[in-house]
Length: 168
Image 1 (cartoon, rainbow, N blue to C red):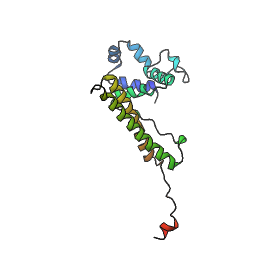
Image 2 (cartoon, rainbow, N blue to C red):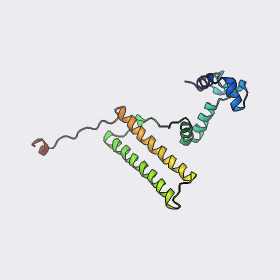
Image 3 (tube, rainbow, N blue to C red):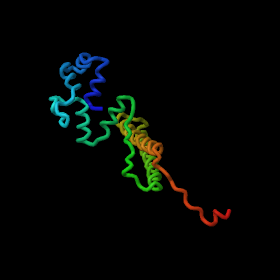
Image 4 (cartoon, one colour):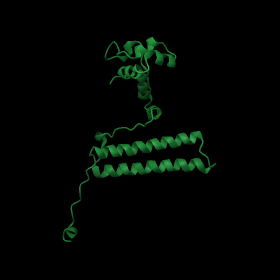
């Protein structure tokens, strides 16, 4: 789905005029955000980039996942990157790498909590933000692992039985 389609559908219920008034912009601008660019290969042709395209550009320029996480959090959810099957290691190594990563991220979360309360028995807003970031890292790591499991990306092969084990 294109960004202008998303905006057009989103403003349909409250109405363009209500959205424009709430954002303190002209209805013409909101209507412009809902239009496809004049040239399909150049989104700048419409004269005004819509807010979704601008956020995408900010992310593309910074590669800072906190931008996407913040937006997802505002929507009541969280962002999880899809597992990349191209970057997979051999399965025996991959599953253990992933589980170690989950344990490491959980340890970092616990460390952030511990450091926050050690000095003054209080968690201030900056410390809470740090804890939030560690929590987001952990959730994303575990969710990627679960998605990979659901997609059947981990197929551990059973080691061949030794002579001793077969004779039992």
